[in-house]
Image 1 (cartoon, rainbow, N blue to C red):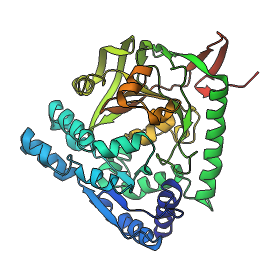
Image 2 (cartoon, helix red, strand yellow; image 1 turned 90 degrees about the horizontal axis):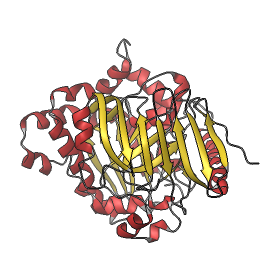
Image 3 (cartoon, rainbow, N blue to C red; image 1 turned 90 degrees about the vertical axis):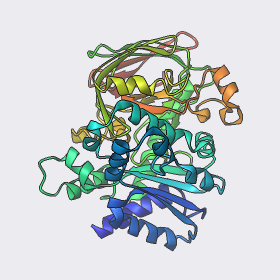
Length: 405
């Protein structure tokens, strides 16, 4: 296991954050219960010459206790959700590594208003970091580690769920390859070519349809840009399969159904649909977690609009593992997905040079919320229409089929 931990640490620090070629301060946010891996990760960082390392340790059990017993004022002051340290290190142009391992079973007895409050505080308390992150001015990466609470949710009948979860992580992140960094170079090159093709054809609208009932038309800004994580020297999500862009804020209409469970603030939202008119979510239905979803889109005035559309094959390597990970980072890379809330400045031509107000004006949404939910199915069809009114089938039977000419 130690050898795989070392390869995982090298992948995150060298390939995802590009810290071999550019030494800078580092902030590691991680669950304390994954300390065995964090120790190896830290040793690897020091070996790379990084001397300024800060830790933002998490603990799901202590979070639950705070949510259960503290009032709103005390919760907002807690370092579990008040992330001022992110801004301190953003001012240093640090690299940021966020490691997650949520135990969602713990949060079942927590009121939805507390989940919404602390989730909002988690995002709103680090504005400098969020600004630099959205404009691609700092390297950052989100990844998963294995802890008992989370692993038991994914593998409830396993004798050693923590080890089983680690092995699933290693499989998804290509750690079992002889050279994981080279393997990711090859994968991100394929992602780059897919984004390049979408940019050349230049779509005006995307029409999503499947048997769940999804019938959604997404208009794109005229100067939109498709991106792929890992194509600019860093990888922000480990693992990643997606190409993505930001839709026109007021140009989404129809209804969309979720295809996988969504975990938000440690709570589960499942089997839901969103009705959208002129970009705004106007109606929500959900079998589980409706109140949390409703609270999420009320976080600010723009949280009820969409900020991202992302394309992922139904036959992606993660999807073909036939697992629900109950973690958006992995589940979104098994499925096409859409994000509620903030869009991406880098997904608009010269967007990183525009203010929030200017981005809103050209149709790129701004919000403290950015929550991906999965919409991909085995029968998903996406039809693209160009600005010249040419039609292309982009997805058929859940998979990317677009070709030029």
